[in-house]
Amino acid sequence: MNQNYIDTVRLLLAIAPAVFESGRFAMKGGTALNLFVQEMPRLSVDIDLVFVDHRLDRETALQVIASELAAVQATLALRGYRAHLPANAQGDDVKLVVSNGAAQVKVEVNVVFRGTALPAERRSLVGSGQSLFTTDLAVPVLATAELYGSKLVAAMDRQHPRDIFDV
Image 1: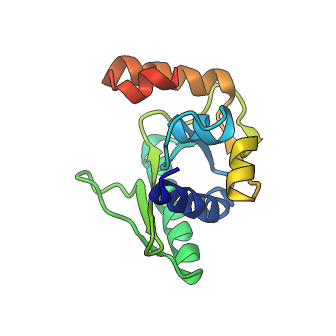
Image 2 (image 1 turned 90 degrees about the vertical axis):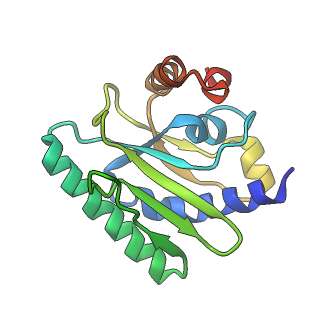
């Protein structure tokens, strides 16, 4: 297996507890499928998030998301990671880039789809991941139906081979 991939997954597993500490996010996307649902059939190493609170209006939700990511950034910086929040064109801080010198992980919140239709599920790292990385980690992940539903939307929207493979 590619050493860069291994280093990146190790970084992802190391920073995930800080990302999910507040309880405001759940994991979605290819990494959720490939590390927490399926037995690692595809290399995917970013953290795609959904903001689980659907009660807040967009502006308030964006403020909370930015605040949460800033808190994660501060926590990770104290732990020795390089973490920065690149502002997007709209000025919304919805992405965090974390590195440790050997690898880099992008943490990104989807601000279009906020909230979940079904309760998020706490899922452990798949067995092959536990064996390979000699660790276990449980994180909130979108419910399986919602996880695959969002992947179907991505597959139809982007028509990228990775999305089609995931579904």
